[in-house]
Structures are given as C-alpha cells and as structure tokens.
Image (cartoon, rainbow, N blue to C red; front, side, top):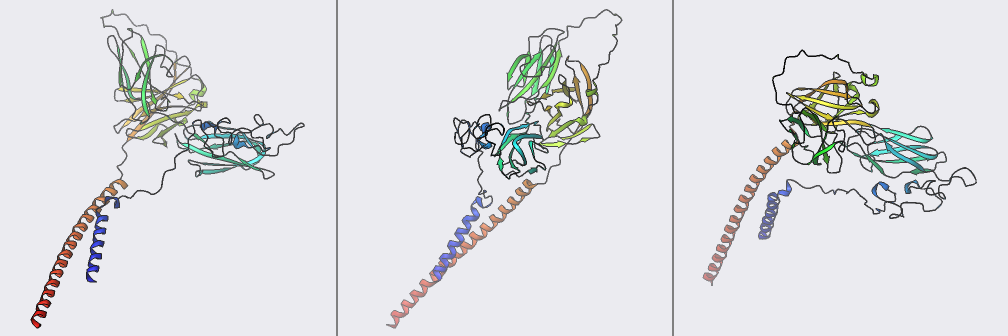
Length: 481
C-alpha cells in the first residue's frame, strides 16, 4: 500500500512539473472564434435579404431578389411599384388598394468623416425606428420617430471615420402592419495620407522633386502631375510625369523662367487617391549684371473677397487625428501629437463651387502645401498631412483661390505639436508580471525537482532496508531450523 501511495505521489509531481514547464500556462488563447464577414461576388448568400451592394440580383439570387408575385409587397426583396406591380399595386384607379406596408427610395447621403443622413419613403404614413451600430447587433443607438409620415429622414452624428456602420429600419403603420429593410450598411469617409515634405528645387536645366511616401499600410504608389497654369487638382488634370514608389524625380522637360506647378497624389490599395501635396519651381537664368533702371511699381489692387469667403474662419473647419476630432484652441491653435496624420475638412456648402483651398505648413525655412479635394458625394473638402517630429508650434495657413486661380483670402492658425506621455500601461505591467512569474515558476521547478530527487532517494533507502530485513529474517529462519 505504501508503494502505491508513493507511485501516485511521484506521478502527481511529474504531471504538475509538466504544466509548470509548458509555456502555454502563461498565455492561454481566447476560445472565441472570429465570425468572418460574409461577402458576395456574383453569388447568393441565402440570408433572406436582397443585397444589391454585395452583387445579388434577381438572376443569380431569385429566392431573395426580384418580384415573386405572391401578392405581398416585400421591400427586403427590392419589390416596389416599378418592378413588381402585382405585389405592390397603386392605391388609386381600378386596381386593388395596397395591402402591404413597404419601404422604398432608401438612400444614404451626405456622408462625412463623422456623420451621415438616411432617407427613405413608405407607401403610406408610418412611424419608424432606425437601429444603428458597427455590427448587425446595432449596439450604437436606436433612433425613434415621433410622428407618422411617408417621408423619413434621420441624421447620424458622432460617427468614426473610415468605419462601416450597419443599420436596420423597422416601420409600423396605423393598422399595426410592419416592414423592415433588413441589414444595410455604409462607410464613413476614408482619406489616405498625402506624401510628406514634398518640395520642388530648381536647378540650372532641370527641376528636382523629392518627398517622403506615406507610412499608411494601404499605400501603393504615387503619381506626379504637372501644369503650367496652377496646381493640378486631380490625378488626370495635367501632364502625368511619374507613377511609382520612389521618393524622388527629376523633371528635365522644362524651360527657363517658366513656372511649373506640381501635384503629387498617393494611391491606396483599394484604388482611392489622396487630396494631393503641391509645390512649384522656376528655373532662373544665369545671373548677369543688369543696368540700374528705376523700378516701375504697378498699383496694388487688393483682391475682391466674396462675402461668403470673407466670413469663413478656422472654426468652420474640422480637424481629426488618429480617429479623434480635435478641438480648436483660442480660435486658431490645433494641438496634435508628434508624427500623426492630421485631416482637415470643411463642409462643401460653406465654400462656393470653383474655389480652391490649399493648406500650408511652415517648418523651419520650408513651406509644405496640401490641396483640398472634394469628396465623391460633394459633402466636404478635405486634405491630410503628417505632423512634424519636433515639439513646437508651426504656422498653419489655409489659402483660398478663385476659379481663375487668383489668391483671394487666407486664414492663419498654428499647429501645436506635443509629445504624448509614455503610458505605464498594460504592456509594461504585463512584461513585468510575466518576468516575475517566470522567475517564480523556475524556483518552484527547482524545488519540485529537489523534492523528487529526495523522494527517489528515500524510496531507494526504503527498498534497501526492506531487502536487508528480509535477508535477516531468512537468516534467522535457517538458524532456527
């Protein structure tokens, strides 16, 4: 019985030692599994909702899309009067009245970096709830209407930029009939970072361009476009000089005393382009000693500033960094961390069409310029830049040019760059904790091995003593005989 107890004790010690030695004890993985996002590319996902934005059509997904002529108007299938007259008949004339409640003309518009509007109609007066979230659980908020109507509009605010939001609209009419859109989604505006420190330096017979590519993981390449009238506002507006991933280019096709305007755009892997960084240069002729002629000073005509431009201030602009909206301090200062991507935007309706905006950041003796681009839905003008790597204040100017590329107005501010404190956070604490746990487990392992060795020695001594006792008994037995 004693031997069995000893064997069990040794086995328990060995098993416990194996757990101590195994590193998985220190970091166990989460047992939960990520649920992949279902995407459709010309296939049917059979979730009961016709999702045209995922490529589902009545041809490839007849069970979910198109008119099924079952005398029920089903908006989740995309049925309405225009494509499914039998199921969604008009309420006037000789046709039977509409029995079902359905949603139509669903649109998501005025999408900005942190807001959007959802518009829809119902075939008759109804009251609706809109459920919104970053997942199909709609965890962000629920927006409830207070009055019945056929035209519906909700405004979503305080959204995160470059983020996909899901929503579902559920409506009920005065007869307690209900309908819903099913899961729909949209994505707030995405901006890829412009290149950094773009400059143009005139040589004797060429112009040297250099820059620093974006560190954005979605960065793919850059394109340089040149014009002799003004900075090219888009990737195709001018002569395309270069496309690739280098950080320098030499323009040899130039003439003396001509002004050359350059815009460089960064392209992301999903095909979108940055707003553009800009620079210009003029090749000067070889200096000669000119005759001294009194200069003729032309009269200075101040630019005519339209009232809608003159009333603009930096408070009309929004500033974002690392997904957070920044507050404007003293109506002119933006506090931002070192080497962070700064996005500057202004609502489209605040600037008349045809005007061009350029942000200029002065760093030491250099001034770096960045174009504002209009979003695809004409909701905002925006640009992006990388904050400097030194802690100090930098002049930031936003200049406005008219449709003839003439300067008309500027707003002066400053970029106050600060260093974020190094957090004594979870990572440092975790390293400290793991290190001390490893030391403790190593000492515990040594103690267990020592106990195991002592136990083995005791077992050997016990066996030896038992053998000696048996030999002594045999010897006494022989003597007795």
